[in-house]
Length: 163
Image 1 (cartoon, rainbow, N blue to C red):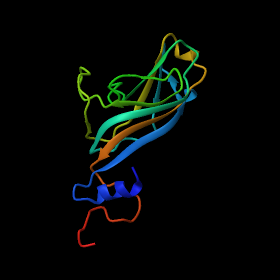
Image 2: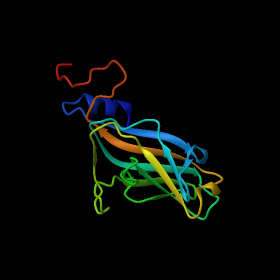
Image 3: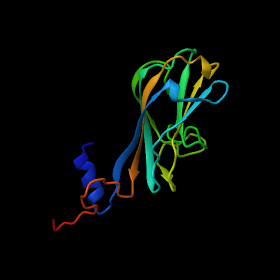
């Protein structure tokens, strides 16, 4: 989506724009959580008043060294809140897309309402031991609708039909 279209969405009477948190992650960025799990908290948070609708992962270098590697994207308390199922990150792949997981029983994909600034936690689980992982690089994106203006330039934030 172009910046102009998103700007127009935020300037509309509804004021909702499409945003994302995106970050390049390498295997060395993860903390060994013990056993088969590595965790990483992304630097940018999802702001309060947002509706998360999904995630996308591009793996440019597989997380190898063990026999498998899968990624969950969550908020630290629900490991797969922003990805209903796991992303396979063992081999290079593009367009690994998942809807947000709005139900506890994983039966529903939909919007996840964010009532306070929320941290994104990545959890990679391998077959045996996280310490066995020797490589891996990916770009992780979490997409959301923002109900609060996040425009960084000096443009007005509400649509005015007189202009």
